[in-house]
Image (tube, rainbow, N blue to C red; front, side, top):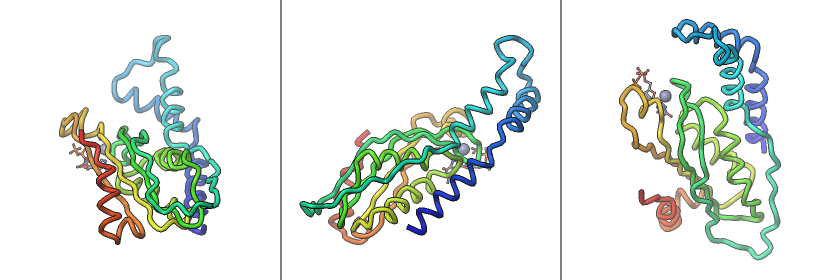
Length: 200
Ligand SMILES: Nc1nc2c(ncn2[C@@H]2O[C@H](COP(=O)(O)OP(=O)(O)OP(=O)(O)O)[C@@H](O)[C@H]2O)c(=O)[nH]1
Ligand SMILES: [Zn+2]
């Protein structure tokens, strides 16, 4: 649980660093410097909206990691596919958007299914690399669950790469983080990765 608390503290500290007033003032400067006219009724409030919209995308929502006893000793893979992911890349602060496939091999306890999606959403709120996001989700589940294995695959399109720069719309970046038997046992690993292959 130490690591989980560490992650939660990191998020709380990060959130408390959001200064909306300073962000709005900086947004005014940035938009003006970029030549966007803030004088008319339609754009007068844009710096405030921009600051709040970005703050919203950087602010995670806390939740309970509800678990239940694994009474039937279910020992096969539990996997939720195609969980939507929306985050911001830390290099350009532009969105990357895609899906996560998150699974685990239960030990003593099973997790409320929605909590896999909530864990993804919780960590996606922030500016980061896709690699780190993938590892954070897996590490959070590993420490919270005591599972025999945890696996996370994320497939996402980075708008910094598709809408500008290299301009490669449709390209998908795939990252994975595996722990325990899903990493070390060849058959479990192969089953997990086969079930996370989107086929697109
Ligand atoms: N590894 C990794 N790189 C990322 C991620 N998101 C964005 N990047 C990359 O961060 C790099 C930043 O490179 P720079 O050369 O400093 O920035 P740039 O001049 O805007 O680069 P271009 O995007 O190639 O135009 C780019 O190659 C991005 O594609 C991510 O989640 N993981
Ligand atoms: Zn980027």
